[in-house]
Length: 194
Image 1 (spheres, rainbow, N blue to C red):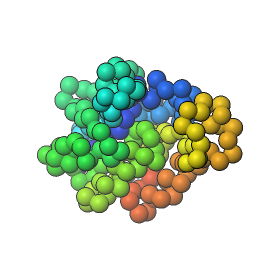
Image 2: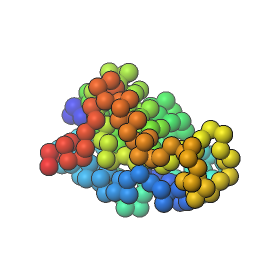
Image 3: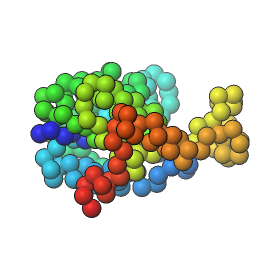
């Protein structure tokens, strides 16, 4: 096995937030499922990673019941589900060990949030020497409020603020930053050969 698929934070926590209505790619779960099916068919290792913030009382607190892979997707019995507590999927998990044991030399990354957990995982994987493919249309993100914006604003206020960075701009900037430097940016169709 030379390739592994790392599915990052495709979890119910995000769908439980009001901001889910602004997701940049409403098909992210479907596209992720296509990658998972193709990886399984090719005999590639599939590794799931979810994010947890224990003790916070929010939707990323395991006590909330939302810290699980989205209900539309089901990890196979032999596919590990790792729990991370920082942005990248390597630092607080045994992801690198699992990739080494699997003999992976390349990784494909997808998931939520494009510019945060998926991008940082791609960068760390690149630093560790893996050939990285970033599945751009199997990632999704949300608008980013200006650093001076009040934290308690609703979705409508966030979207109305001209200082808000749109989700589309976030995706474009992420692609620009990664392509040719840390990862090869591809669509799901390009990756699975459709």
